[in-house]
Length: 529
Image 1 (cartoon, rainbow, N blue to C red):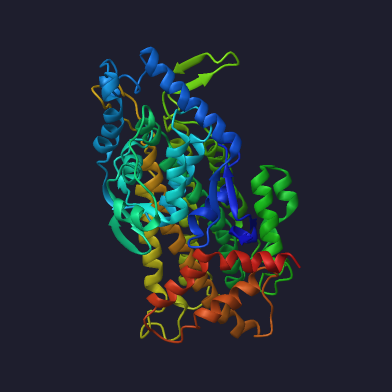
Image 2: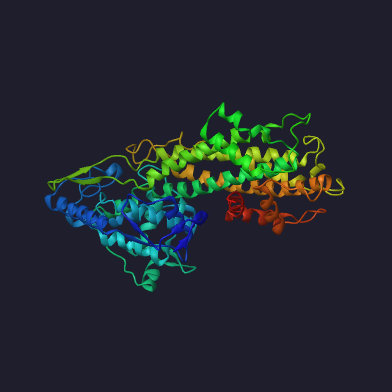
């Protein structure tokens, strides 16, 4: 058994049938190298895949005109391909479409792409042979990772360019990462005991025409957003305690009068984090309410939770959708129908990722403002010293950490411009509306990268603030039920900053706690008891 995200138990084998792939399974396969679960095609799925592949051969024998099987692609849809050139047609689509540029996807993303593509093909509506599908799965199990450039997909007609790069090794072309080396696909196949193949009718199109790249990025980034949403709640509460804030704004009665479910969930989580805290302001204080960045966390963080939940809903559907074109249907009488449609269009995914990007950016915006409040003694009514340092002037303290957070938050505002509202016609205006879903996905990843760092700076700043508060209220005072362990965890990796020193390493140490999920796991463990 394998342990995946949040301690979920994983079986050693994931059997694909195109209907049951989950977020946790994608995470386990993407990030589990070298001990990832083994992937296979289920027996029932294998029968359906073979049935559809046989149907393609029947169409060829009959001379049926079918897009991408006996015709060219895109604007060449009306060019009939002679039977003796069908195999060359499928090889050509992979070669001609492998024109991606830019940085290459990391190994977890590449593994997720391969898994998701194999899953959608296993539904048995794509016409690929079982042996070809099993070769794709064999590459994944052997740890042969195609070099896939990140840019080149318009998110309509699927992710053509990157999926073509994924498919190159299958036909004996392209480069791969294998056992830590970048080598030719042919050499990796030789070492792993695999053999490239000649594609049959429909197979090149089936491999390249779909939303697997957008989906892989969407799933992995949604999982990160879920973790960082909790991290933002935790950082916000630790900042509230450092700032002598009050938890009155999280009272259940307030949120019952505006009953957005995830606003209520967030408020409850904040209450649990701060339970029994001796760092919050007494309820009888003349300072009756906090600034918005503290008081409105349930409203802001809760709204982000809504966007994350929507993204999960979209990608849970897409994980088990058939997204290539044309699709093959065989009825009970064994009659074959080939239908051309547009399931490859990434619009649902693009909109979800744009929504998620500007929502997660808000976590960064509100976090940066809390960092400002921690470092500005006038804004925090002199609860904390200027820039969280002694001997201000000689020491700049945390002054420039807030600059960095501000720079990242500002960059996110640029990245939050939606990609899905843009389009550009291609293929001689036949493919005249595109989703730009891959662009939305890459922007989303950049936004989350930035928020990851902003939250790290807030956690580090809040811990510094807590230490100053201890000097006033007493070192024996306790933080909240959920935040005290997080503070201690940070202090294991980042010391109290007595005087100006090189802090980039400490920021990175905190970021690693965020990235690894250690911050969230610490709280999960505390709240479970």
